[in-house]
Structures are given as structure tokens and as C-alpha cells.
Image (cartoon, rainbow, N blue to C red; front, top):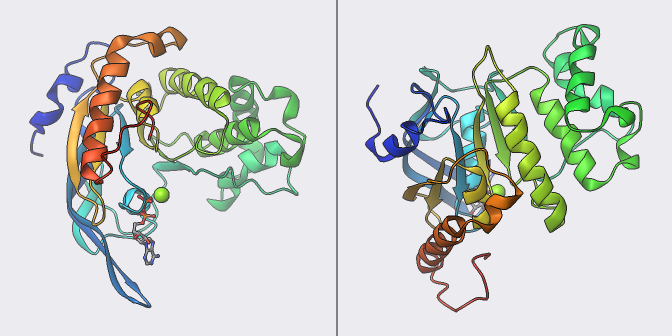
Length: 288
Ligand code: ADP
Ligand code: MG
């Protein structure tokens, strides 16, 4: 597999964020939807290599194809040109290596939190009883031990999103695809969830290997805070406009938010994106 030189600074980080081999390879991928009104070109010629253990954030204007790309990587809707490889294998159907988290927690309201977390086990034909301990351990890890037997409606938005994260982790997938997972949460809960996620990323292991995370967000500071690299997409048809390594030390904590490097990079990305989307008006901050 070809080396991606753009990413070498992140790959050389000593904190072990990206250990080496390419796990997700998007190779000249394009997507054209056949809508009733005619063809919609959502993605054009996307090429991107993501290494095992890497945390990549994806930002770009609404409608530029971020969710399309995530679904394609997950094998939920294959690309219409080019190809996507996960672990060297072309993706053409849903793959068990992937756990997904969406903006809405999408928990089944008539099932307990524990049974929601166990749902992927059932769907994949496994025996939920064998995963019960793991489910409880995951719930404990995100501070939901006391809520295992509650219904989702008894949980706050942030707690529901934590439960959906446990559900994504139950089969210990090496890849987590997160599509604006904290977009519906209030700012403080979101900040807490960011730190929680980094902790889980650091702790969780698939055979001792850190998970590979692709994280879509509308918030540039959130992307910078979390990621090893930020991929900036252009307006539809979505293309890779830029890839920026985030040279901020880990572990990242609440104090990291006061790091001038975070503000600087956020502002650069913001400027780039507002240029890319034609929105050049001045705003108060780097959030857009
Ligand atoms: P994003 O997640 O970046 O907001 P999406 O991937 O959801 O963007 O959508 C990219 C473009 O593709 C949008 O113009 C959207 O309307 C279009 N699109 C998404 N899904 C479909 C579909 N199933 N059929 C037709 N067009 C679609
Ligand atoms: Mg989307």
C-alpha cells in the first residue's frame, strides 16, 4: 500500500496515536445518488488513508457528503466509483469491524439500557448472555452502572448518547464511525463527552490496539480538540480540500481547551472553511 506523506507528522507522534498500517483506504471514491429530481453527485474523487489507531475528524459544510462517506466506509451504501478498502478488503456490504454512533442515540425505548447495549449481539446472531458482563463493564466505564435496567426515556440526552456509545463498542469493533455524535447535546455535556471519548479511546482495546475513529462534526474546535488529523471537505460534490495534522500533545484534558495552539488551528481552519463555502463574513469566534 502506498505511503501517505501528508499524514507523516501524525504517524510519527510518540504518543502512539497512529501506529502504522493503513486500516481504512478511500481510493478515488465517488458517489452519485439517483434522486427523483435527477442524479446528485455527493462525493467526487475522495482519496484518504487512515491508519490503525488514528483519530481523524471530518469537517465540511452541510450537504458536502460527510454522512455519505461514513455510510460508504461502513458498507451501508457502497460508492459508485473508486473504492474503499478496510483492512485491505474492498467494502461492498456492512462490515462487522465497524461500530457506528449517530447524532441521535437511536435507542429502542421499550428495551432497558442494558438490552439496548446488547442489541448488536442479537442482530449478529450471538448469545447476549455471553456479553452481559462486558455490557455492564462498558456501562460502568461511562458512568451508567445505575441505569442498566432503566428505560432510555429515563436518561438525559448525554446519558443516552453514552449508552449508544456502549452499544457501538459491545462487539469491540476496531473501527468507530461517529457522525455528529454530540451535535444535539448542550455545550457543557458535549465538552465532557469529548474528554470521555478520548478516555475510552485510550482505554479500549481490540487485541491491545487502540481503536481507529472517524468523527464527523460541525464544530471546528471539537475536531481540533479530539483528532490527530482534521480532514476538511469542500462543498458538494464533497472533495478533500485539505488535511491538517493537529500537533497538540496528548493526553488532552479540560486544560487543553485553553491551549493557544488549539485556538490558532481552529481559527485557521475556520478561515479556510468560510473561504471554501463562500461565507466570508466576520463572526465572533471560530465556531461556525
Ligand atoms: P452531510 O452529511 O455532509 O451533510 P450528506 O452525505 O448527508 O451530507 O449528503 C450529501 C448530499 O447528498 C446532499 O446534497 C444530500 O441531499 C444528498 N443525499 C444524501 N443521501 C441521499 C439519498 N439517499 N438520495 C439522494 N440524495 C442524497
Ligand atoms: Mg451528515
